[in-house]
Amino acid sequence: MKCLRLAAVSMLSILPLIAFSQAARPIPTETARAYFAEAQSLCQADHGELWGISLCGPMMFVDAKSRFVVANQADANGALKAEGDIFIGYLPLDQNVANTAIEWSGVRWTQISWPLPVEERYRKTLMAHELFHRIEPKLNLPAPQGREENAQLDTLDGRYILQLELRALARALRAQTDGERKKAAGDAVLFRAERYRLFPGAAAQEQALEWNEGLAEFTGVRVGNATQEQQVQMALSDISRLGDASTFVRSFPYATGPAYGLLLDRYSPGWHRALKAGDGYDTLLEKALNYYLPANLHQVMEQQATLYDGATLRAAEMERETKRQEALARYRAKFLDGPVLILPFRNMHVVFDPSNLQPLENAGTVYPTMRITDDWGILRATNGALLKSDWSAVIVVAPSVSAGSSLKGDGWTLELKPGWKIVPGARKGDFILASGS
View 1 (cartoon, rainbow, N blue to C red):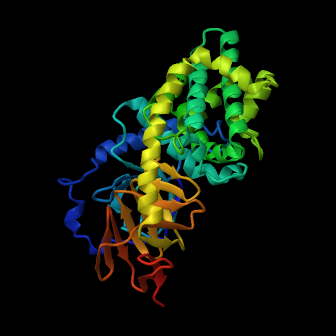
View 2 (cartoon, one colour):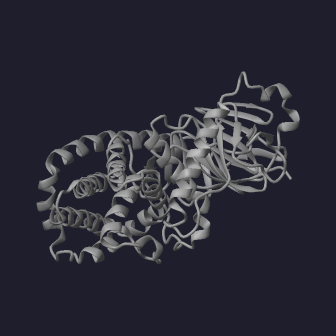
View 3 (cartoon, rainbow, N blue to C red):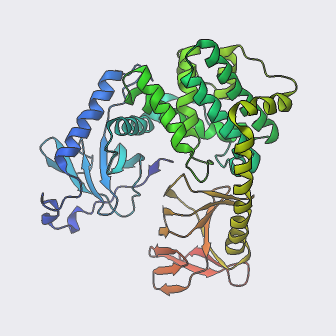
């Protein structure tokens, strides 16, 4: 998820004191204390060894419905109220709630949406993942060299080859001998190379997201699981869970990051502390294994695919492709051909589900659900919104209801701040948001 950086606005002045009573709290404070202690123990066990600096720091749990906050320290502006060794309050409406790092009330926080996973290994992995995002700007990681669109991972060939790669990574993690492990790891590198051959530019797009969410999930697996065996099992679980995703365009690094990371730990210790621009998981592992890609890449890839039940996998993907084309036709009619409202961005912050996105050719990506805050107000979409490929604007179907500052359309609501209005767009029936000043 992208980090959310928004100005602090306290709502405590308008909340009755009874809101702090123990009776109706959506986050049990004793449970929150236990989880803070759990996160602290993870940080102390790591002792800054993984990234060279401590993962410990300001942390908050937020209930999305009530926006109730429990934090492990005070904020800089006094928005939270001390209650023993924790601090409680409410997150204002201009803040999104997500698993991410945010700047709020003068502090950079690790924010985690409540409730956390009940199972300990998933909870610890999640917390360590999000702790990484808070320190990420301090790590001087190489700047992404491409946008994170990854539309190739929603195509027939892109999905098919990614899943072959994931099967090879899983086989490498499960391998009982070093020879078996290296052979399967080499297959993963081979499959990725074939995908990049078919989709020029895909390497930069995938690496941009892998150096964000992939490194975060690698950190979650490494720090959140005490033993090497537990780390491998969690990485395998990440791969297994990704198989249920309807799309891979933003969710794939949660599986590739830990898998490649653990293999690189074995064959190139310290790799993560020496990253430079242009590095990719595949190139790093290729070098670590002394693996050489064959000249007849496609032919060898097809041969190796038979070892991973490629025929059955491709048949399933061909069936999915038919349904995808039907969905694309519906989205074209909705967001490209029909009347729409265009909301240009000024200072956008977004939260969304990365597991259900649908790239729409060169126009952008359809997000079935999302919440956007900007200088103009708050957009909530529950039935699709098109985020332009250059992240300059979001598009929804034209409004059906307009009542002052509140607008509604098919599966979306918009609360406008003073000074903003919608005006006719370039096409008949279209609208665009404009400043009233």
